[in-house]
Length: 385
Image 1 (spheres, one colour):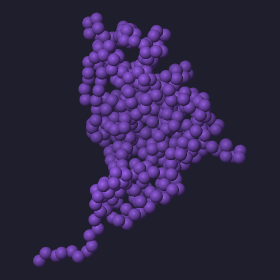
Image 2 (cartoon, one colour):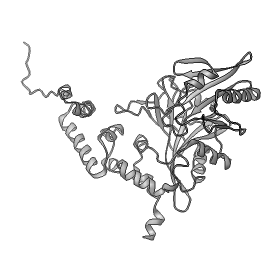
Image 3 (cartoon, helix red, strand yellow):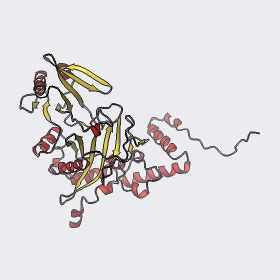
Image 4 (cartoon, helix red, strand yellow):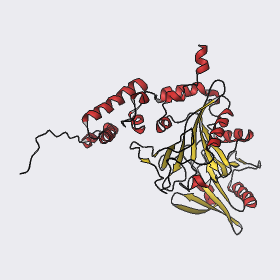
């Protein structure tokens, strides 16, 4: 005989909440939490209670809680309470970085000029393409199709062919990035524009016409990355993000570092999508468990595209990359904290750019509480008060 359970059934239908557009985000949070807590009401109440308490006391948003995987049972309460909201984080950052100097490293053209003047290695610079004020590395105008063609001709004479990239001076997350290969086809310069999923052939005039010149473009060599980095995801330049904090006496702390790999044929490793974050053990350079930065926080020990082992592996030039990141921050006046992007070529590390206000989400990706980031930054100042 079939037994019919008389136990009460607890059922939540979160789709009903979608009738109110303003509650759609809450719907998503509730559905995710419900799945992460094993569909147990008591665990769900605990998680939402923690979210509310951290929002009130530390300024942490529910999305920060979820992106950090703070719902996982192995994350202690002391660890969660070690983070801070964006307002407090920004206040501390601008106490360390003099606001009068903040734009120097936020503009890639000024940043590259300073790094080059102090012989800190970067990708080779060819010019600034802009219709009004553009100039190339020879001091020639770089403002028109004819100027751009002349620059490409000069590069081809030297190299025969070249892999280049165009970058917005103040772009982020790969916005405006263009990867090119220039070759000669008879008497004409031919451009191959690399896109996710394929390559498109263009004339120089077609390339120029396709560009948005609201800011102009930096023209530089595309980094020929070390094969040990390229093998994980060949179409993107895979790089380190290293956080550096300078103490008042000039000594440096490196609270966290992580590698970024592209996924799915992406051309950059730091886009909004198609990227993999791999925290690095600072003691030995070994890669820890990788994850996709999303609410689901999917984890990987191998790259999902190539299947190559990530966790436990150490890549070449890790120590040199950390040292270069530290020296790069020291090069900038008024700067004491930055997230430094470092790519590794066959001959060693190169600076891609500095971020004078690094994204606070990186701390929870690496499970480093922000209180630890600033632990020694104000030591001398505190003693003098």
